[in-house]
Image (cartoon, rainbow, N blue to C red; front, top):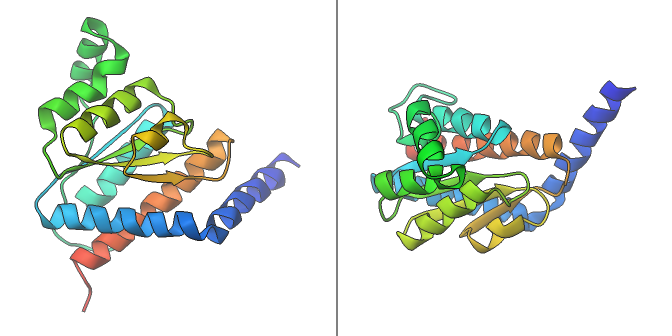
Length: 191
């Protein structure tokens, strides 16, 4: 049955993720990097395409709105939400330039860019990560197995142990939620 098979596959990837001490440590390092940047009044910027853009927007909202409890907002933004900008730059330059130009305009040294790409090879994400590193912006890549070209552009690479796009995306949201919870509880501890 397709339903059971999909759930079993999802569980299997998450079990592999759980058993990978190296990836778990990188997730902890990513949360600490984001926490430290926010404590220094820096921005957390996200970018992705398609489902990964939706994940970027979802995770930015968890940080800028609230996650588990009411607290002050944190500066987190998904870079694709201005469709007029997006379509103008894609038309006037190219789709590969959309995020790099925003990084150049909005990013500042010490900010954090989280690039989400299941393949790790999305051209516009690669250009954004490259521009970020050039500007002294920390980079976190969220990818699938192996990391693709993003592995060379990420200060921290969170590589999900799968080549199956839906399973990778499911893990990206899980990982993102864990990071949001860690950041929220560190910056706004509940007494």
